[in-house]
Image (tube, rainbow, N blue to C red; front, side, top):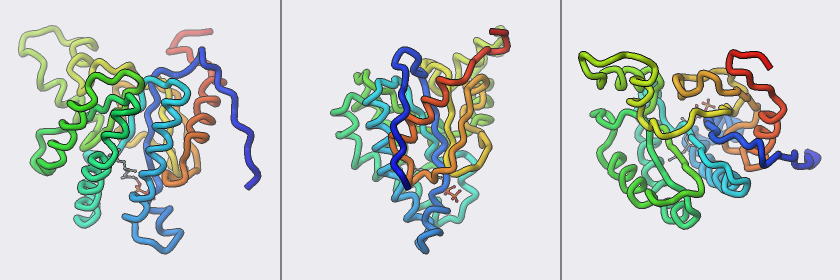
Length: 238
Ligand code: FPP
């Protein structure tokens, strides 16, 4: 493939928050005659390069979809693999992310008997370790689903309290995060798959055919350049 010149990004119009649906690992592996799990493994380099790219341009919030509340429906072997893989990846990378100034957070249903306690422990250790970091907020959606998040928020509403958008929003898993301006999905699927449903109501959506294991910071930059060409009106007029 001829090398594409890097798109220019206007640093004054950076999105604050980019969400990424990391899809296509299974297809990447299948195309190489490898087991699906090899595709997930290959996704690690994509994640690390995307984080480095976010740091390079000064993006403040990056949220990635690692495991959805619906992913439990996958074959038990793959679920087990993904749980171990998430735990090991974070254990392997947390010091490096910490030294780079990345604050790690997890969103998702933590109090779920299906979620191994060792995974929750790993998540909380990474959160504690990086809590003071300010360069980039990396949020990992794990056992996350937008429906579950809204249900969990509504369950916490005080019985006689006022019910409005603010009351629900303030009870989401990480209410301190700004809404995503841009959500990128790899692998050519054009769906939101229960990712940041409430927060992404006005996000720009960008779909790329690149499979997640092939995604690199240049693809993130290209997505941001495309985002900067769009006009956002939030229901109003220009
Ligand atoms: C979807 O591809 C990908 C996943 C279910 C897992 C994504 C997770 C990672 C790349 C690891 C990130 C880990 C952390 C801790 C942030 P797919 O299996 O649905 O691919 P397919 O659609 O081709 O079958």
